Length: 392
Image 1 (cartoon, rainbow, N blue to C red):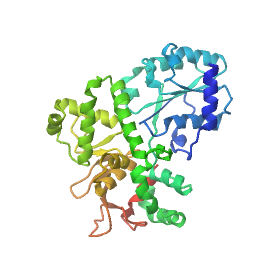
Image 2: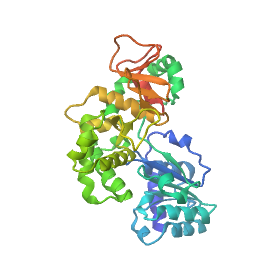
Image 3: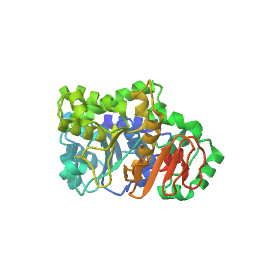
Image 4: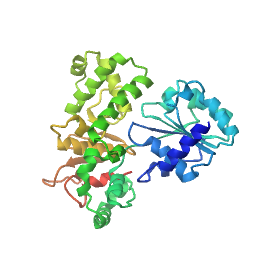
């Protein structure tokens, strides 16, 4: 255990979290079993280490970060390790990549039941279904989703600002005042193109080629997260990769499941299952009418965020696809997004109709909100698209 303490101390001393993630404020830290889920690359490890840095000194042995990738955990069950830790005065155990333990849900349940004075905060893949597939943790674990940077977080990081987030109702009612306040300090449109290209995943800060890094991360999502957690044979990986690429070439678009099943040489039912896996991995989003959801076929499929569009469609990028994907991605965290009526694209919370535009022009209907890309400030029901990046 001494080596793990040394590793913990080194990592906490050297963790570099350039901005404070909004999720910190949303978590009830009094809970004893807290799960931090999210896709690869969004900063789950940094999030855990930052928690340790903010609440304990690096050499405080009441808190310990462990990664279940460590080979020692192939022989020692998590519950056994947690028992040793709490007997030595440990109070908070930070467990990274918890799904690397084959019995992780049972182990966490044992820890919860046996050690009432021990808090465990664990990270895992977005593919993990805590409630649906792990009854051991029902009523015990509380899970939260860590997303990539919002445009607001990216802007604060790059421009050195400290803008707060707003609810959708705030934006709709007060967008003119909010835009005025933001534009007094910074030109948001000057940062928008960079965010759409590479600002969602924090690893753009690393001194590596962003596109290559994102492609590597996407492949790991499929090879490790989806195949391992869903227990899918490795031989099916090429079909899933091909499906993702075919979707990327046509998104946003209505998926032709029959054609896709023919293209990847599998059944329609398998295609639908693969779509669900890709959604769980946060590689795509599926848009449905109100009161419909999986396993029905989605009306539209989107890539999960604009960065994926740029890395998957490097030669020809559809700017309207980027705008729609950005809006869906930023809105989707806290609000219900459905297919809109024929003259609009999105219906939000069953009552707000939105149309996404590249520029001003034409007539505007009073019962529709227009999110417009190339404008700093709006008026009435015409709102700058960038401002919807301030929802979290």
